[in-house]
Image (cartoon, rainbow, N blue to C red):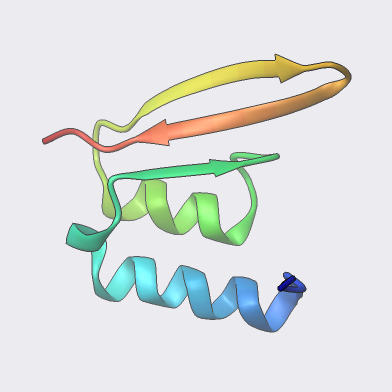
Length: 66
């Protein structure tokens, strides 16, 4: 099974993150400026942001606090 992450899916995910932040403890993605990352950051004050490199790809890991 595969899923295509398009703008509609991203918008749905961001909306759900804002509506139900307690259900999201972390977010992993290629940017901290994308709609999903911004929704996570907005709904989780004090988020820890980790940046990791996988080969030539940069990945951001956003972790909510307790």
